[in-house]
Amino acid sequence: MENMTNVLELLSSIQEDNTVPNNVRTKVQDTISCLKNDGDSVEVSVDKAIQCLDELSNDSNIPMFTRTQLWSAISALESK
Image (tube, rainbow, N blue to C red; front, side):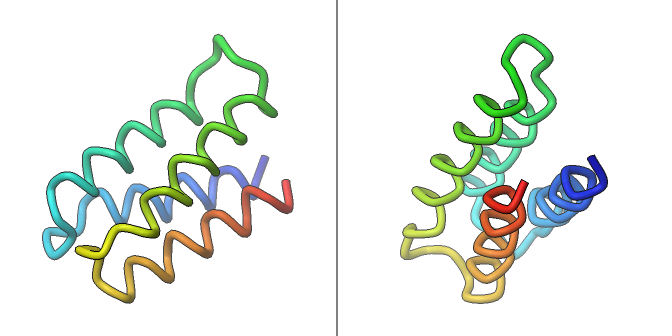
């Protein structure tokens, strides 16, 4: 679970970053909500989050540093 906490902290920092476009921050917030959702199993929540973050990382409007942060979050979730 420590890994999940680190991912949530990383995503929260992206969501609070004013240099990130609003549409990206909104999708990151949706991903955070998905990971915190108690209705789905952990595996389903992680899979949904990975798919959303992967799609988001391909957005051409994302700053490079943010893209790297998204890739880090994806890697951490995949190793879960």
